[in-house]
Length: 267
Image 1 (cartoon, one colour):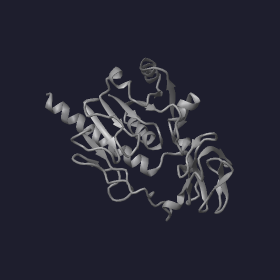
Image 2 (cartoon, rainbow, N blue to C red; image 1 turned 45 degrees about the vertical axis):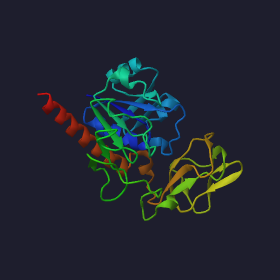
Image 3 (spheres, rainbow, N blue to C red; image 1 turned 60 degrees about the horizontal axis):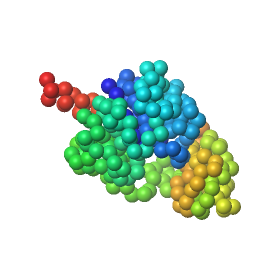
Image 4 (spheres, rainbow, N blue to C red; image 1 turned 30 degrees about the vertical axis):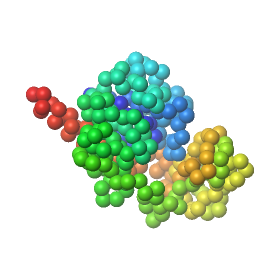
């Protein structure tokens, strides 16, 4: 079975890990300049560096759909620079998973593949996809929705270690992001993790810097640019989150269920 995952950020990477471990082949797509925060657990870094690894799984940049298939044979996860999903009609996958997390549908259609799954808000099962997987932390996280959509985006991060919005660091201005700290660093309230145009991006709580934009990234005021984990476990910076794996489990469930339905319908 071949699945194309649109997006290669931390959530999409958690999904890819779940599918790969279930012996499902995965090809991922990404934008030319990824803006991932949790870069140590994002296959999108293959676009930037040519190759990256998360939890023992290696992803490599592919220059074409044909090269992606060759990388699959070699055991890697191919990542194509393909924001529009142009590779989909070429690869003819068994399923497409939209995990861009744009909070809206950026072009995925229910006709893209026999099975199409939307991740998070912005999709409607039965209209632009066959199923939606919930991404909001709480009782319904990772659940498969077969009619309707996910809970609307509140703009407030879920609780981790008793903190929600305080965990997120945002750019203080428009300009070029200049990182002063690295993922895994211990940070303190009032400490600057980066600057933009000379203005500091100040930490709002103590904890480990779980994610931060790459140095030199163009940003705008208010853009999410960092993530503090108050649980202070450095090892969490290098493994997929509980949320990403829960959503990945929901995608795997939806994929197997919908594939099984198709097989029954066609004998």
